Image 1: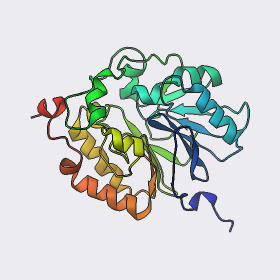
Image 2 (image 1 turned 90 degrees about the vertical axis):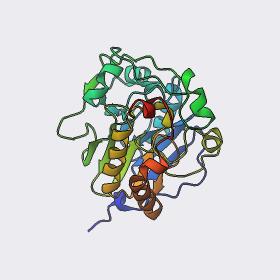
Image 3 (image 1 turned 180 degrees about the horizontal axis):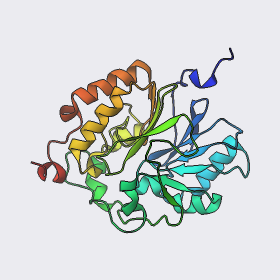
Image 4 (image 1 turned 90 degrees about the horizontal axis):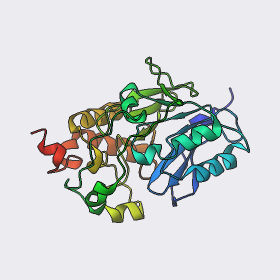
Length: 281
């Protein structure tokens, strides 16, 4: 029986720099766009691939160049998948959809924020955290309008363009936040349901100091749902997690760290104070 390349162990992550295309699995590569990661799911030189999230505004050329490097010239993805609609995950969605002429998929509860109808709850610069949290009041929070490209993810959990994967509801950071999970090798793309860097602390972001953390504190309005989402992902026992912020994590480091976060969420992830903490008490 031929060896399945998708069962190979994930490549160790050493130094990941902004703008570097890094391979996590034989069929999954990532790209760091300023402060956030996007993921290319598909074997190299294949015409069967999808893009997960679209990074910051004005990142189209960088993402297209990385796609050309991995898949070849003029090979568009089958679809663009969104974990959620915050500015650093949809920043180049319109430009990429127009460039490639492909559909974008997201959870139904994200739709008001992706069709220009509603804006997310404002970030909380007063939340417990570091310098980035303090600066979060300046982050863009106006809704994008992805019509006519935006479509609903199928209700049955299937992922367009990704047979073998399913989407998992992981709300809290946003109402319709989703993660993507593959049963075969337990690979997981989690957006901001949890991250592997303390995203509110500038030094950790600059150095990409690796630690499993809850969702970014300054932009998470529902901590009860965020807690349940981390528990849901931990129960899946992922082999590798690819996060929106920070380096991919795998093996015992991931399983143990995620279990610890799930069991001690209030101590490790929940801020001691903040607008959305105070409102819930």
